[in-house]
Length: 179
Image (cartoon, rainbow, N blue to C red; front, side, top):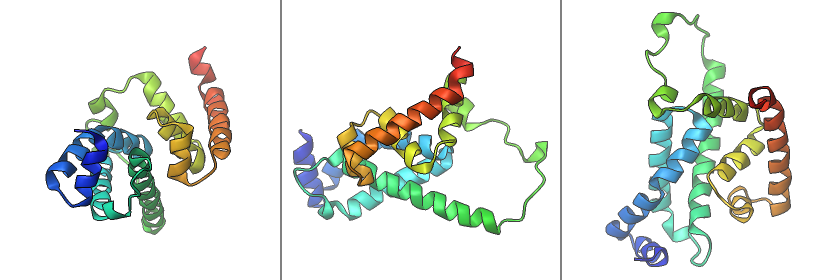
């Protein structure tokens, strides 16, 4: 069954069609969100919110436009909201002294099996300004400049410019490791 037909059926709240769309987009949406938040439980929660939000607002999707970009746009908005809420919560928290008893026995990175280079790239991505981080993460997910442009609601030239500077900054950060 082709994607356009699934989208039309999902628009009529056909749960079977919706389940097939979830199956198509579950992994790439989760990967994008995980690359943004670097925490498995948060990525799980945000992924579920993406699909719930998309289901709730499927009627706002314009037939003939890029469905994949629409999905990623929802994910991007939820990640930005997540960071805003987390930032507000961190300002309210009382700092604690971290000790070994409070440190988890295993990290999400080890569970997912990220190698050293992937860890360094993830750390380097964290140093980018939010606008560059979002664009670079979407680019790493294989989205085109046009799709990224639609997701962030900016011209393609802006996407290319921010991607160029993000690559340049990542290259500088990772230069010691790559040589």
